[in-house]
View 1 (tube, rainbow, N blue to C red):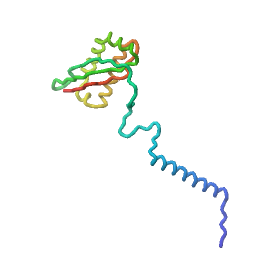
View 2 (view 1 turned 60 degrees about the vertical axis):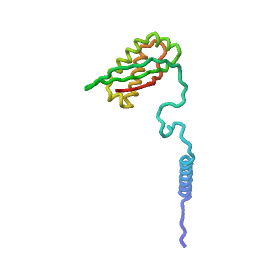
View 3 (view 1 turned 135 degrees about the vertical axis):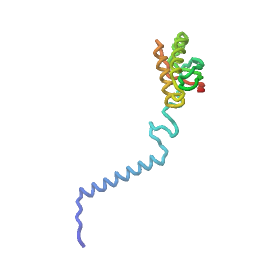
Length: 154
């Protein structure tokens, strides 16, 4: 029989690589089958909106019925809007500027088309556009969220 010489350093390196591969495979298998999700993972079917967060003070801005920009026939939107504000004092300012705020919202809504409002992404942009424009009118506090309580497009 022939004697095979094995370099000790090569043998130690091979055993170390095998141990690392076994540990990595075991850890990956554990994560896959244990049901543990990373802390920043979004559950399946959820979007980026925070669930169950506390809501701040709210104010009902009112109902709006506005003609939309249309090429062929007269179309309109009817919506009811509630805003969440950063602090209670902001509600007093919104009440003081209610007519300016309503005018700004009507102007924004009138510039929209039916196609824009039927697109969910565009509807989110509308929400942020209204919030941004109304926040420019406020001197103290801000609107942190806007809710369409009712939304009908005809």
